[in-house]
Image (cartoon, rainbow, N blue to C red; front, side):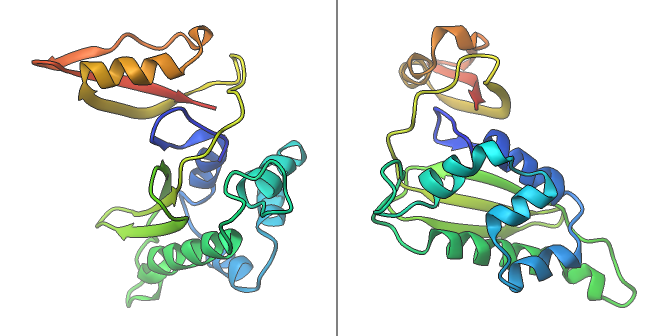
Length: 194
């Protein structure tokens, strides 16, 4: 998942998941249903690297035994992520079972920080399946120095004061684009993740 300093993010891991699930395959569903390790699937498919093991297993999925866990008291995090992507893949692959078969739908993922619980919501539209990973707030590690940052394809639309608050979270070296005025007291800010 990597991270963001805004409420909605992709980050490096979600982007890599999107890349893989742009054209979902039945074997991706089988991997999850067979109980293969999520981190192992990520390694084998290039979603994550060995260097991200402490982040994924310790910080994101870690429990009370992990000193760096983002949500140490919340249980079943890996199971929730697995089940969420199983549901998303079942929906995305359904067109392949039609007569005549149709193309599968791409899956896109977003990480939403702020709800009280750790859960996944899956939404279907005519064009795609969207996975929302909802997590409570947490104390993230310090963001990496550029060029560790990535330009998100996400914009916050909010009152000027809120945009200023969001901008203040980013280190100056991140060189955020200037906010754009959209209306009386309302601005748009493209955000960065890592």
